Each structure stands twice: as C-alpha cells, then as structure tokens.
Length: 452
Ligand code: HEM
Image 1 (cartoon, helix red, strand yellow):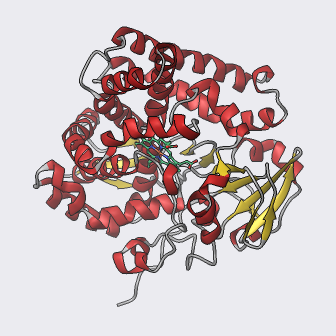
Image 2 (cartoon, rainbow, N blue to C red; image 1 turned 180 degrees about the vertical axis):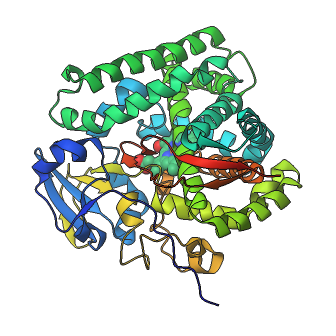
C-alpha cells in the first residue's frame, strides 16, 4: 500500500544565509521572532552573534542544551535583561525569581501540579471543554479555534487555581494578555537599550495599559482574600504559604506576582498548543478520524483515566508542539566561563535556546518540517536525546505545569474531536507569529462540521 506523503504545515519565510544583526530590528523580523531565520541555523550546533553590545550564543546541540539547563545549571540564570522585561508584570514570582526565593516558591506550588493532584482536576477541565463545545453554533460553521482554545484554557485556570473567579474569564483579560505578549518582542529591543519604560510606540503604550489592568485585577483578588487566603483552593493555599515564609509585605507582593504568573503562563501556552494541534489535525483528515475513534473510546472511561487512554492523540500533540513550540525561545545568562559545543562562553554571555530551531534541526529530525507523529511512538522516542524535544524546557526550571497542560490539552481535544469534524477552508492558511509565545496571528479558522 502506498503511504500518503507527509503533511508540511505552514511556517514563516526563511533566508538562504545568515543576515546582518541590524536587519532584525526592522519590519516583520522585529515583530515576529520566528520570521526570516536563515537555513544554516537549522544545521548549526552553536552560532555566536553580537547584538547591541551583548554576546549571544544560539545553542542548538542537545548535549549543550542539557549542560546549560541541567549539567552545569548553577552557572546559568535567567538573564537580567529577561527579568527586566518580565518584572514589571510578574515581579519576583516563580518565573523570574532566582536562588532561595525561587526554591521556596517552587516548593510551595509543586504539590498542586503532582500527578494525583492533576488527575483530581481532570473533571473540571473536561467540564470547561464541554461547556465550550455546547456554546458553538448547532450547525456546520466556521470557527476560530484559537479563540475557543483561549476561552477554554482561561476558564480552566480560573476554576483550577482561583476558585472560578469570574474576573479571570473576562474577555478583556485575553485582549490585554495578547497586547502584552505582542509588545514583549519589541520590549526586548528597547530593554537592551535600557529604554523599555520610555518607549513611546503605540504598542508599548497599549502594553503599559494592559499591564496596569492585570496587576490591578489580581491585586484586588489578593487584597480581598486577606492573609488567610480566603479558601482551600490553590490561590488560598499559596497566599497562606507565602505568609508563612515571607514578611507580610513580601507575601502580598509575591501573591500578586504569582497570581499573574500562573494566570498568564497557565493558559496562554496551552491555548497555543491546542490551536496548532487542531490545525494539524484539520489538514490531515485520515489521521483526524483515527484520533477521533480513540477519543470517542476514551470518553466512555472515567475522566481521570482518559488522558492515559489516548496515546495516539498524545503523539499528535507532541508532534504539533515540536513543529509549533508554544514557548519558541528561552534564555540564560552565564555567571562564569564555560565551554559549549567547543565554543568558549564568557561571564555575562547570553545563551539563547530556541525550541523553534532545535525542533526543526536537520541533524536531529528526518524531514524536520514534515508532520510525523510516529516520531513520538515509544520506541522512536527512546532513541531521541532527551533535550532535543523541549517544549516545556528542562532541568530544575522545567515548566511546573507540564503535566497539567498535557492532561488539559488531551481532554479538550477529545471533546472537540468527538463533537465535530474539522477541515481547513479552501484558500485559508495560518500565520505563525512568534513573540514570547508562538501564536496563530488572526486565529485558526476552521470549518467545523457537526457529527451525526
Ligand atoms: C503547552 C503548555 C505549556 C508550555 C509549552 C510551557 C512552556 C514552558 C517553558 C518552556 C518553561 C521554561 C522556561 C525557561 O526555562 O526559561 C516554562 C516554565 C513555567 N511554566 Fe509553563 N508551559 C506550559 C503550560 C504551563 C501551565 C499550564 C502552567 C501553570 C498552570 C505553567 C506555568 C509555568 C511556570 C510557573 C514556569 C516557571 C517555572 C520555574 O521557573 O520554576 N506553564 N513553561
């Protein structure tokens, strides 16, 4: 039997060779961090560039990535510049903290994301997915699945971590977060110049308004709950634990910082993973049918058992995150000299780790730009280097919500697939747009056909 050619999902333009650094500060390259990558980047182990006075090493060899994130982790911190970008929004919460402050906060939140705790949240994840599907028009329709994903993951994070507070499901929140993340790519440029807060561009002005909205909304939540936490949910437990380990002022500040961190990091990335996965399935009808059969069978099981009963859908989700990593880049700063992939690293150098590049690297993946979920079948996966697929990062700072996100995405996809058949409307193509996250600009517009 002839096998069907592998599907090649859309990606932004690439250039045949490296282009001068200054070209990155103009036009689409400034707005979209995954636009205009040079072909040789997808062959290189490491590439060193000078950017506005910083030495930046783009590290793509899995063994070197492992050394940065795990083997020699004490030598690499979140860069000061990344913290300057993040701190006006997320302060000194888990994402931006270092050292003992980070360890204390990580220990406080870790139990919420342990396997048993995530399984206990499966019913509320499934309920939110069901509510979203019930709100779709009861006929064949064109839907924006990226918006549907954002609504659903926002509702889940509000229910799972914040006692279902309605303010966190306000559509204004989604708009503010979109504005903030879009501005972040450009903030990086202005921050490198030390001008972030003075940046007069309309995008940055809008971002400052959005930041104020988020900090005010979540500060109100913290104030209303008081030092006792006001409930037995994640947020209440977090507030109480912070008061137990920090001074009252620090505890209040860190509660707001972490509320924003978990609200934003806890839904935006998963929404993007979902949106890209459903696009990849819509473009491959036979694979979609197979995944649907698996999902329908899983829906007959108790909800806490479903995610484990969908290995095909899990492979499809992983392959979609390989091709469209929801966090396309993260960085570190060297505290002392080191050697990575044979290149000397000096104190203060920046290490730029791009899942976007590593996941499409020619030395790591056959046909890297093609969709092939069998790469994630158990035997094939066992042959991979564990740092060649890093949608959730790696080492001690690996995403604390990785399991939560995976279970959530699988449960949502199961409900979607059981309710509709998705296809790509003629002439429509997605527009992958990288900032802090990898979003489909303009949405994922699919035809969603009612299943009898
Ligand atoms: C598909 C979904 C997700 C992806 C792809 C993702 C990706 C990542 C990555 C790459 C990092 C590490 C960044 C670095 O090392 O610099 C990270 C960290 C983090 N993520 Fe996620 N994430 C996802 C979902 C979630 C969820 C659902 C939550 C919370 C409910 C969450 C909360 C966090 C937090 C708090 C950190 C910082 C951890 C630390 O520094 O200790 N993420 N995430």
